[in-house]
Image 1: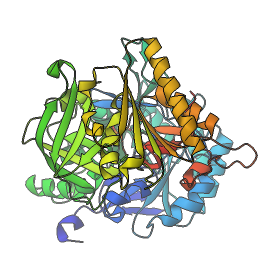
Image 2: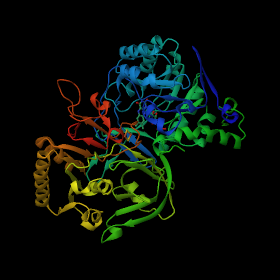
Image 3: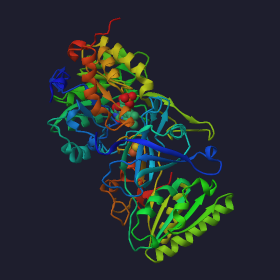
Image 4: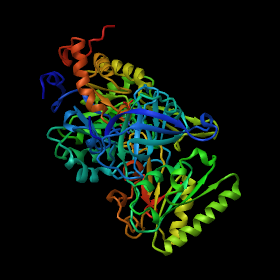
Length: 312
Length: 280
Ligand SMILES: Cc1cc2nc3c(=O)[nH]c(=O)nc-3n(C[C@H](O)[C@H](O)[C@H](O)COP(=O)(O)O)c2cc1C
Ligand code: FES
């Protein structure tokens, strides 16, 4: 690796050790499949890490079609957590990923505390996994999902249930912006033992066809992502980073090196790239060097000292 | 840059049809990509470099033809295609592809091409590249006047008939003709290939299953990633209740045997007609 990229290294400290990343660029759950889908477009090991599509105990067929709609500066999705289930992931996806050189974080979803615990237990023993990201913020499933993420007590209970089974794996809890005060949920998760927080998941939204008088999504509502939500995400990251003492990972509309550094300046340790992958399938890959170039331009020595340097 | 992402230059954008600008049908000619190979039926994800954050997705377009240039064809249907229609000579566009599965090519098999509307586009390249075009014939149903579509490409090469759908009785005539032809191709162990809007494909699928015709359907679907990652473009596989495996008698991707909906962008857009469930 050349010297320039060397400076992008970061450390995310947690109770069980350190999550070390080559650079702060991770891919966001649900936008990058299980990683393998993007091997035609770049070398996965050049990324800081990947977060998988949300995994559940059993395979899930997801919501009826149509599930996606483009909106101005963003998109709505109501995929409904279609996924192959944890067993298939462990058998056919994880072994194909270059885990020695690529931190792979499993995003997990369940309906109940028991299922969250069981799922975490199964993944805790998976060879090569770098962490768990707990989705308590999905707006597109009828039961569980965002309900866990909208109530501090529920959020804490899920965090505890996962932590108990996760062994040494760092547990990242993914927060929803669809709440009155995100810091309340953030603090509850941190107190319950979360190692890190990631924010944000999508904002609930809706789009309609004026001529047909029908919603654009079969699910009627969906989760809004993309550049449109960046200001909301930045605000959430800033508030959460000040409210807790654990690393925060920024997500939401990040499409450029400028966006990424803005989130880090607001307090994020790393960022996740979601909808921007759809603009160009090599977006996450090219972003790494662009961040290094921009750091040069802005005289940023390293990310450690730059983090949280926003003056207010 | 990965080989499957090309930055191409717009050679020209030609409006099709009599009312030209008003019809909203265009042929887009781009500089030639450095593809090793491609198969008719495959598509590209295209996004002009001038698009900003207001249009976060690239757009899937079926490959019409590849010669000295890459030729794509589109109709204005929404905000993206409206912006594509503003492209000018010299503009740069990012083109990802060729993507997805193409149509089956069998040199000496009688092959029936069924196109509805813009579904005619991939068949231009199909006919052009087919090693035995004498074995091909085309039935084309369309709503806009014929001049709006790249139909003249077929006239001299294959037996081609078109049906202008002005009212419901025209559609009935078209579909009845399709049904008769599917039956006769099935009887000769021919091949049926169809592309067009979903209601048309549903009708064709019904006929193909009824007559037990070997058939492929090319689906048009809203797409975001084009990589099989977002699961926004999925279609349900047709499963056999007893075995839990796909009912298809054809060689299909293993993923289609697992029961979950599969991405149209990677397992398709061309699917064997007996492998997918097009019901709502
Ligand atoms: C198509 C799609 C599928 C998603 N699936 C998941 C998921 O399974 N689990 C999850 O935690 N977040 C999921 N998300 C949310 C993203 O991970 C991310 O939090 C959100 O899109 C905001 O980031 P972005 O603006 O960069 O896309 C999904 C987003 C999209 C667009
Ligand atoms: S468009 Fe994303 S899976 Fe097909």
